[in-house]
Amino acid sequence: MAYITLKDINKIYPNGFHAVHNFNLEIEKGEFIVFVGSSGCGKSTTLRMIAGLEDISKGDFLINGQRANEWGPREREVAMVFQSYALYPQMSVYDNLAYGLTLQGVDEDVIEEKVLKTAKILGLTDYLDRLPRALSGGQRQRVAVGRAIIRKVGIFLMDEPLSNLDAKQRVTMRSEITQIHRETGATTIYVTHDQTEAMTMADRIVVMKDGYIQQVGTPYELYFHPANLFVAGFIGEPPMNFIRGKVTGGALHFGETKLDLSKKLGAKLSEYEGKELVFGFRPESIVLGQQKDAYVVSCMVELTEMLGDNTNVYITAGEDKAILKVDPHDTPEIDAPLTFSIPYENVYLFDGHTENVLG
Ligand code: ADP
View 1 (tube, rainbow, N blue to C red):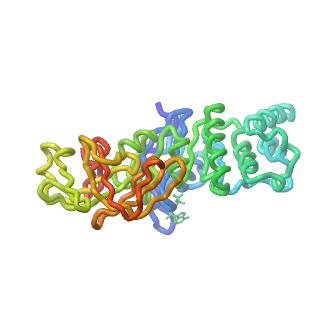
View 2: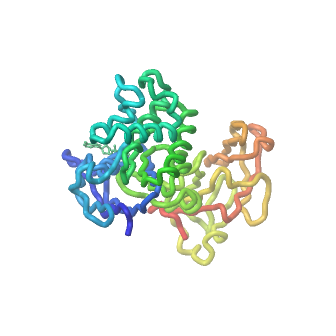
View 3: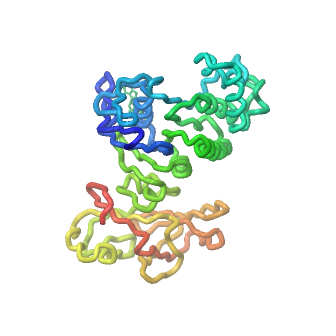
């Protein structure tokens, strides 16, 4: 039995806006789940329904197999970390960490033990006497995380907890939160709009768009087996390249290059004649020059960006544009022709209408 079950969960706000549609998910104990998607897709709404901060309009929410729709946050045993740290400014780090337990009437000795243990996990031992204003953004966020993990809760909910931090602090906190999850083993649901955070932290990712789940899967599954065009374009940086067109004579055109789709579709090719398809390939999945068992494409180099570990190459082929990711030592000349190969196995085809992956 799953620890948390969301069955056909819907949220319709009082103004009639339908923010979440038939959300279905089973979460196992100890999993680290990330909800990802662009702003406004319904991630926070779903998280707040799980937290008990927002009514569930329709559907069943179960904890350990028991219907929990009407339970309050305390009964659900959830702790939540928000984007704003919400620390008490006049209290020391120690008191901020201890506050929840003090309210619950926990013994001073027990509180001290827990505060010291939590501070150790989070590297806050040397800062216990400080006030929040004397901490860096990253340290404040750690206190906020500490306040949540110090209580023994079953479900740990985080809503964009790193978005107030600078890029470097985000990377550090990302691995710290993963580490804390490993140590505490707490079931965690984490909301972010950042696909890198999702990919690096999650056991499983839920990709959302306009209130609908697009796909649920491990980072590996989403990257290598995207269910549709949206997921394919959302996961990966730079994003997957798409060449859209109508199939004519069994092929699509990428600039001057004819892409013979029989290589991908085999006997099913005739079904797609005259239909609109999208040909997708990742910037990093190409090989420079001509290769066997690959689509060989001729193009012009428009711009290059040397990033150190790789170079992004912006190319044009007729009306089509794409980005290639190459070894910095192979950075090509700008305004010069270039030939590259896309191995057949690295190509994805999507239905131009439903936008679902084929095959
Ligand atoms: P996300 O967390 O993915 O950015 P939200 O869950 O916050 O998205 O919001 C989803 C959609 O619901 C948005 O279009 C938002 O404007 C709308 N929404 C959020 N709260 C309310 C509310 N109280 N009343 C009406 N619409 C809301």
